Amino acid sequence: MARPQMLKLPEVLVEINMSRAAFYRMRARGQAPRLVKLPNGHLRVRRSDLDSWLNSHAATY
Image (cartoon, rainbow, N blue to C red; front, side, top):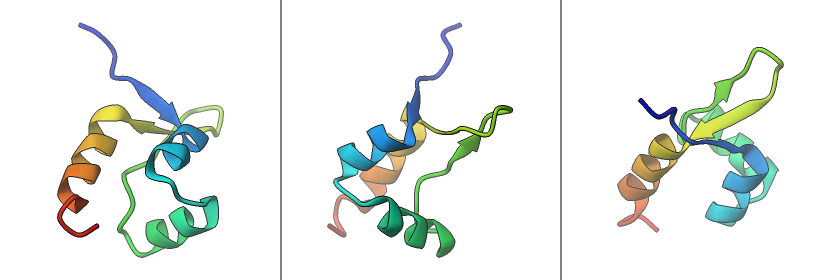
């Protein structure tokens, strides 16, 4: 079984064309894609979570 692709936060920000500050504001409101915190403290977003989030917001934006 293949492991899910994990994206770094800067990669996600480039893909959704958003600043880090705006992303964290959305996250505080519960409106951002789900983040996964790794044991080393780094943050990642699963590709599948980002794709689902983008699809659910496609009509909004």
